[in-house]
Amino acid sequence: MFAGLALDRHAEQREDAAWALAQAADPRSRYLVLREDARDGYRALVAGAGLRLLGSVEQRALLPQAAATYLGEDGAGPLFSIQVDAAAGAALARELAVDDLDLRGAGLRLPGFDSGLFAYARALAHWQSRARWCGACGARLELLALGHRARCSNPACGIDQFPRLDPAIIVIVGWQDRCLLGRQASWQPGRWSTLAGFVEPGESLEDAVRREVHEEAGVRVGACHYHSSQPWPFPAALMLGFSAEAEDPAIRVGHELAAARWFSAGELVDGLADGSLSLPPRVSVSRALIAHWLRGRGVELDVLESGHRAAD
Ligand SMILES: [Zn+2]
Image 1: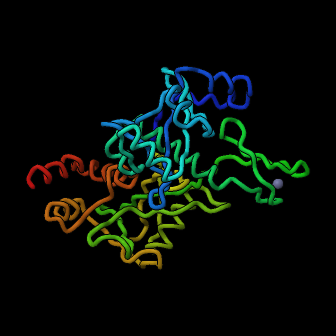
Image 2: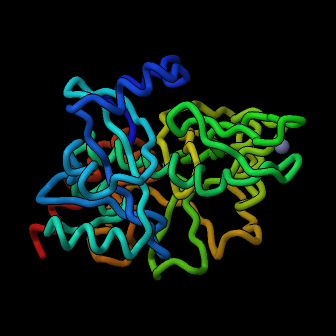
Image 3: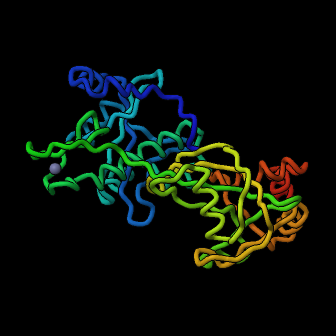
């Protein structure tokens, strides 16, 4: 989810002012509108089963003053994003008679390209909203490179800042025929997920896997292998999924979790069947890791859950 976006980002040309002007003037340009939202961060305008992008004529008529961030080229012309505040976004949605949607909802409901484009735009919008003042000298930052670089306006300083990504590991740990899942106190009863945490300075990804699993569950991890990754702009993470093997199954729950325990495939199947257990939603890499682990034991998670829904 959110990964594999088929877009040419033109990362080198973004710095070229003449090229940038030509993109903005291209009549094929389309604009993804992000509406600021206190709860969800940003919501995107949607119509039917897709994003409701503005054409270049609509953008000039409806949002002529808004600064646009270049996203890339998808074969049908340049794509940009524009942030508007909550009131302006609501007015625009009314005028166009369209709805808006948060990113998690988009991941479940929109085509992969649309949800991926939204995730990318949301990550840039969040960074821009935090890249206003220089962290070194306190002067105002100016956005350059069509929204992809911020430069300090103080000539004596002039440092550049780039969109920030926070790497986080997420891991399914196995021990013989069981896997380790944890739950946080704030989650609904019965909800379990894989363990996860941010990578710290001075750590490799494998170091972070071993530290997090030990801190959260007291379990020592031996072998660990990269599985897959996912942009996770809530607000700025890159999730790096691993599978790992425990050296010892003894659990000592740390302060981050309310509980951690080992589940067999049969216990997961039975818990999902009787409703006593729920797993992370389809948008998450956590679910992909659990599905991968179950598949190795002959269980297809999506088939299992769709069977329950059909039976309901
Ligand atoms: Zn500065």
